[in-house]
Length: 494
Image (tube, rainbow, N blue to C red; front, side, top):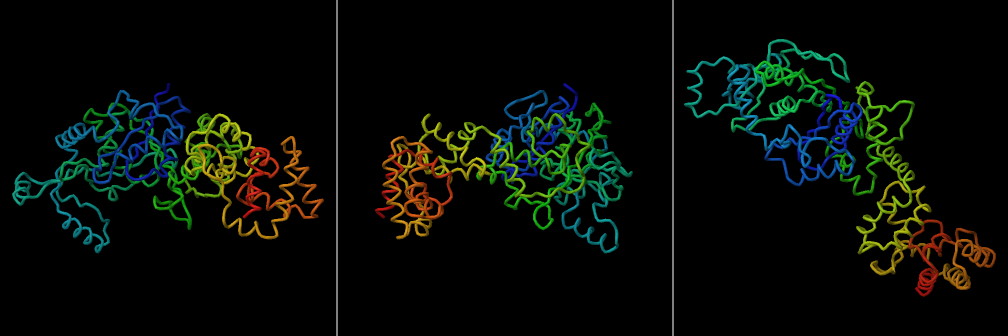
């Protein structure tokens, strides 16, 4: 094991999104590549927005994706607890030490006063931001504010020097001191803010590398300054963490992908039946390159070669079509037996199975999957393609043709075709694909002199309920003679 320690620290607010997943993936891959430690930490100090359901969804999402963590909720570790809501005493103690050491101070400015001074700074073409008014208050001035009933926030005292560091993705980065004013670390209510709890936990959990989104780049000067203060107080024991800021993920219209964009929701991909392997594979390509022009790989293969130096600083564009195409490649890479098992929850959700399928039904599903696997891009698509095999059986609803399909295909002109097909199939003794095809071709193409489209289309809709289905003759074999004849006869009668 190396001394590399990375962390993934989401807030439990709303549904997990793909940008969050990419951050988790890159941290997981770096930890696995270096033999280091992947820490999963929950930043749940925002009581107004955090929810227990979102917390559970986060854990479930990482498990579904296969991103196992070495320390964190339900796993434990030497630096717990790993939920910030359970670490409030720690933050209060650190805030007091910062105050006592002169690295922080109480600020009594009201929101209205702050806004007024910001507007004045803008009007004077000065850099807007906190102007340090409360930095050097005397005890008398503090008492006067308190006598007015004012409550103070705690601000961190930024050094008056520029902040420079070497970013793992962007190289040397500098923020001028005038652009990083003193900032609030504790609200007037005593509630600690992200600006305090995030770097404090990085220090106490001995995080060595911080890989996070580009939107947090401007937070780094503040966190480096706070780290130096904690080091001077003897709280931080090791060197500063190294920072790497991952590129933005852009959506339609070349705008940053937002939580409100449908394609950003992890839940959407799970609901539609994307494979975790496929989604992880695609997200890895957003700002990183495997090398050798390779785009199809597992997360384990990614971890073997993952290098932060290969992360591109330029924005990455999210392309849903490419994501779906890669997912389709993963669908074809799985064994029929594996894909059958993964398809079952979607068949149950659609009502095809009202109870768990039998071993025989699972075996039939595994036999049917190769017939459609080349065309499947998501698991949900498999429901429409293969669900017809299970209707009219115990634990499944009755079969019904899609009304729109019936109106278009099962017309009066289709009746003689279906009658001829029924008669031909009744005479098939050994019910297999070869014999079924031979009988139908003889009756419909040779006998009725129909083109294949008009010969087999009505039969396909009669037995599968759709115009798009697996190959007809193989479908009839899997469906069985009795149910095949029953469905055709029913279509003729209607």
